[in-house]
Length: 235
Image (cartoon, rainbow, N blue to C red; front, side, top):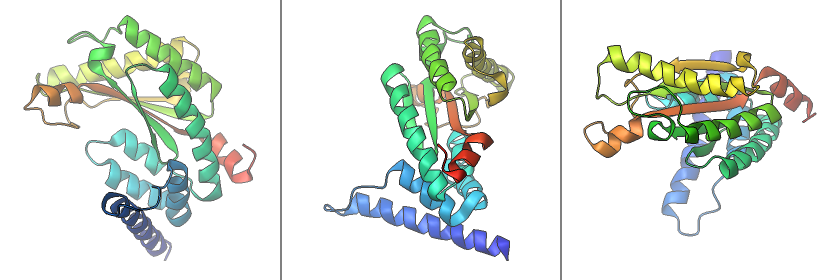
């Protein structure tokens, strides 16, 4: 019965979000699109953790494990809205301070994408000076908002084989995590994974696509302490 309720809730969430998206795309006088905070509240309120996890896999898909992890960790309801507002503030600070990185609000979390060309020289996992500056700003924000978990993922294009790409992507993701940790961010907050070329976001047959696929993604989302505080309304 519980499984059936979760499935129904998940389908309702997909329907509502899909309808909102369609209206925004096709209706000239459509209402203002939902905020990330409001979407998070609906997702969790309808589906809870089970619905969020399913939606995370569906929406994240093969090319979006960072986004999927954030959506899968959704709390929803009033607690989710509180977490969302906290993430709005954190994302705004990151956007102001991190030149060259793409910062997105996703559900009740934040996704940051660094192009590998900004972070590393070709075939290297040594951080550039620009990368170190960006990660220093990231570390400041993670220390200020210390009630989150962090996933760091490395990705490559298909130029090399898996024997080269897999360890390179892992080393690059680890270099980002290590740099943040060296500046005081608790290492226990991090999960670090290299995916090689297995999760492209663009066409590897073009130079522009290969550039887009060479990236490091960071997912930031509420830890259990923040979730419990939000449920109690104490944040």
